[in-house]
Length: 84
Picture 1 (cartoon, rainbow, N blue to C red):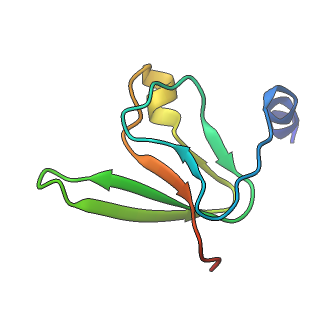
Picture 2: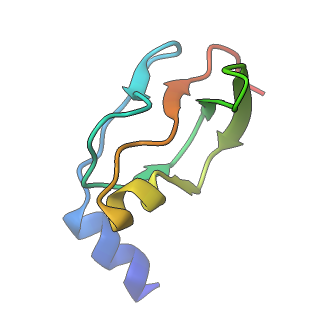
C-alpha cells in the first residue's frame, strides 16, 4: 500500500469529539477528509431548504469535490454523537 503511506506522510491527523463540526456548508476548502474511525454526518439542504442527512463511517473519503474543484463545501460535516 504505497499510496496509503504517501497520503499518511502528507496528511494532518485530527481528532474530533462527538458533536464537533469538521466543516460547514459554504466554507472555502483546499483539502479532503479521510474518516479513519467513528461516524460523520453529512448535512446538506435540498431545493426546498430541508436538511438532508447522510451518514458515513470509517475509511470514507469526503470533501473531495470541493477540494478538487476549488469550490465552497456543498455540505456540513459533523462528528456523529452516536456510534453505530
